[in-house]
Length: 178
Image (cartoon, rainbow, N blue to C red; front, side, top):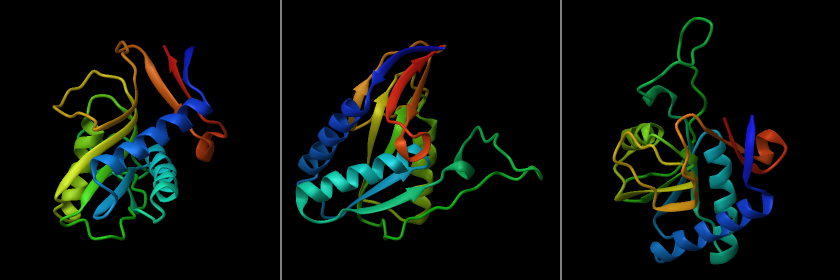
C-alpha cells in the first residue's frame, strides 16, 4: 500500500542537479572521476548525473555500470538451472588511481554498496570511492555512509522505498509503501 509520495519528477530533477554540483565542487572538477551506476536504477541515475555534470562543466565525465549480483552476500536470484542471474558489467575506463563515484537509488543496509566496492576493487585500485544516492533511508548494517544524498528519509523496517524512473517504470517518483 502506497503511504506517500516522497519525491515527484521535479523534486528528483532538483536533487540530481544539486548532487551534480556537489560532486563537481568536492572533487574540484571532474578530472580523474568516474561515475559508476549500480544496476538497475543506480545506472539510470548515474546517466542523468553525467548529463547534468557535462552541462555544467562543458565536458563529459567518464561513466560505467556495475552489476553486483555475484558479489552479494545474500544472493537469491537464480536462473532456472540455479545459476546466479548476471547482467552485463560495463566499465570501459581504467579505475586505478581514479575517484570512483558509486551511484545507487536507495541506501539501506549498506550491503549493496559493500558488494559494489568489492566489484570495483576486482577491476582496479581507485584512489577513492565516493557514494551518491537518491534516497538514504537509514537502518545500516555496515559502516557505510553516502557522500551525496538527494533526500534522507527515516523509515521503519516494515516500510519500503520504491523508486520509479522513466527509463524502466514510465514515470519519475519515489514513494514509501508498507
